[in-house]
Image 1 (spheres, helix red, strand yellow):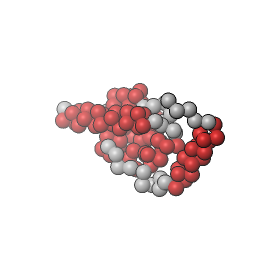
Image 2: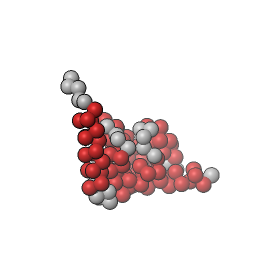
Image 3: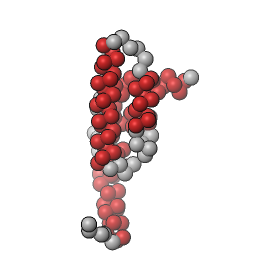
Length: 116
């Protein structure tokens, strides 16, 4: 395994911060958030896989006539990487048009819980 010196790593961190400033955060808000929170490729894939799984569960629940989907939010929160704030993550996913129906339901469930 190749070992990098501190100067090289600092240079990469600086270049990373410059790239973050160049990204159109309105076009890719979730990916921008992932960069800002320093998520690994594996963590991003885990979030997207989690959303895919919850989307399927949401569709199944809708077919069964469920109207409250709080358990989906609980599952989402429990599996979300610690680095990601819940509300900000949901907003970023929705703004990037990822799993829109699911995310809207999760946001409604989160709002309902906050109001209680």
